[in-house]
Image (cartoon, rainbow, N blue to C red; front, top):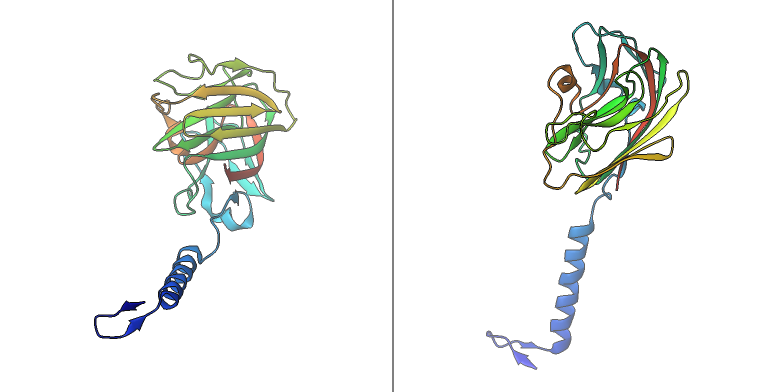
Length: 223
């Protein structure tokens, strides 16, 4: 038994009950509200107004309809930009982007995506440099054709190619058609964009080079 300074008696039961009540109140205050969002479908009606043409020089027509982006061939590039990354509170690390891309006409890159990595941005090139190159631009100021992420694949026109990009704290990974193309450490590396119109696709955007292409099913998920 303990004496309160003003003469009241506090029992162990009363002290324990007060502690339990305080713990319950603290739990409610720290756990109230909805859980953090884990998935964003960027081509749903929710984000329809957040897409726009990137505004590249001599770009082709960009249309958004029925959950799909269509990009006509530009001279040379066409881009579509999603501007609501920050306002929608999407993550900049520990997340994945999934989508499908189709090259309708042409023989160069299509469905190429620019995306945030912490405080920087990079671009995943798909089907560049004549139609087959895959890689990340840029790492340590080296383009996709020059750094260790360089790969090659044949992309048949008028076929959907599923893409998955994973942005983690220390590495980037990319699968196309279920095959792992990029698995690179970014710890201590300089991440940047190739200078030019590609910068107009930040924070997230899709780009084509002298090709007509389609993109659908764009989803971002926390990892």
